[in-house]
Length: 346
Image (cartoon, rainbow, N blue to C red; front, side, top):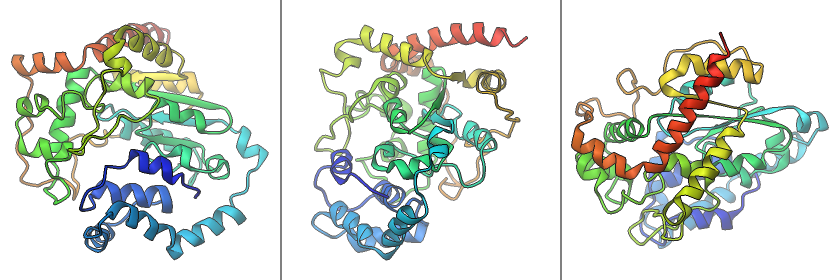
């Protein structure tokens, strides 16, 4: 897979010591097209973590690996662009965290042939060749909407929204439930969630303007470039970011983008969302059990002794209101439009 290393470097953390889990996972997914095992993550951290520039050395290590060489041969000899592949409709799921995306991805995957779900889960679609992208029919990941435009051929782009305060609290509880790991330190949102109460977390200086927190749904629909990463390792919205500098314009752009999608749904009305997407996309998705729901999820990444999830309180709700004014306005518009569209199902 052809990778734009300059693009990767722009998204990477500034020079630091150590190699965190996210670095290793992204490296394997972007360069080798698969997720690493737990042993591979630990081995990479142990081998490259002590290097002066661990991320750069790790990336180069993957590029010169035999697995990467064989993958390039596969791309060049097998995955050649076919006009039929280019013109076949693709489905792109812009997965906003804790908005039912994993469940929807499972249902969408049932509608495409085996092996035709792209393994890219992050904002790395632009690093793939047209040959590779054309070989897949479903793309589902935590993409910014702008990334969907690099997929060749006709695309049906979909997403799911959730009441913003509930989404943030669910995200916090999910992060807090993770099993402790050395990579989850004070320079990661997961690490902060594990060390602080919800009120402390959402009031933390590295959280209140983080692009994954502050009006994150609007941001994912409108973002053009990644927010810069500061010296403490956290991305942060800058004063000239539209979400802060021109909020009304950012909200209007997000709404126009959402309204222009092939379909969108709401977590709170998931079954009606399934039916609406089936009709609008010509699919036959069947219901599946909710995925990634914390109260039923069993996973080795979660701490079996995790604390009980925090619940919404009036003071916490007020904090979350301050972090989601645009997301709440977008969700209100989306709820009204969804009710009108879903009402036509009857």
